[in-house]
Image (cartoon, rainbow, N blue to C red):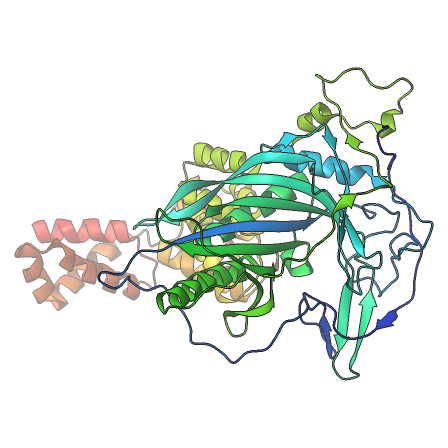
Length: 558
């Protein structure tokens, strides 16, 4: 059978807002009285008691948790997977819907080349084996926001299989980074569904098909994780990889990366327990909380003689708990069948046989060409940071995990004469600490890279003390637009260079605090720190603590 025709994308038809009966899926909240559709059957419950990790009781059997993930990433493409409709976030409802998206009779799918290339590139980055022949299937289920009554996916033979993802987690005391690996079972191409918007005021449900048919990468991870932190870090690493590749923007706040977590607990050495699935988690923070809560809930239920149902649950971020949505005991029959309108997807590489006679280059996807275009991956970037700047591995993780922080750090490095170790300390502690304190993104910082670079140059050149540098930073934060040199000049924060004045100050302090002198002579050298602090206070942080300490030690020894 011939390979499917690929297209490069074009504009799609527009449709109208459709009203349907209540009872569709519910997903997440929306303004103006609407709630977004997600999985149906969700029920409200009273707030349960908060479950936290506890030490096992004496004589109690230990538990082991098992966590697997299914991650849906929206492919960065100008058009949808099988139609020419454009893809834009927050477009007017039903303004980006083609006849195929609306499942009008007689319409046929045309595979988007960009989406296939994105799937191959992601598979290569995750160390997968790329199948040179993959198949499309129909997965049947009936929701109002799925007009065809089925989803086109890759159940039998996906485009990529048998990969692995390495990610870092903090372990031990003091905290250090350890590398974990999770197996990637498969990556498959599939369509997204539309969106149901429930108007509780008017007791009606509206359907927006803008998202229907948007290309997704489903990344299925084996149950190799054991807690919420591991799952969150694995998802964050995947997010960084997708963004580095450009295959997905992976913005969880905009629904471009959604996670389903499968969780079970069992005693060591015994078979895995009954699993529950927590659906549609849209932040790494909520993912970790949902998994950890669900692990504790299952352990507590089993210890109290209860049983775990094979069910789908959702995470209520307000209550901090999972709530049941529907049970899976009566397994739904999706009636998978081969997609009759799409022939097998055939890919080529250097080891492949010659291309079919007369093949159009636009219709051929070469795995080796995509491999050559792979950009630098986050793991490589972190290794370079450690080697080039001598920073600790956990610092390299922080620089990449915070959006925009690596670019900020590199810009500071370019513009300052300060040592990389000093820059790393200020960016990760002082700068990032202020951002976290005020819930700001890096791009919203009132202190620019050039302003911080100038400040660190002054500090490194010993023009100002470290205490004065902190004072200058506070002024830069509260008064955007000023330079470090201006603040230092206005407040006269330059280090005192008058040695005679410093010696006179130190002599006065020794005379005013005889008890400190006695403590030092009795063998307590730390007592001198009090005098250093008083000297810095008296000089408004203009005295170099190192110089002050040296003068005091000389006087105490004489």
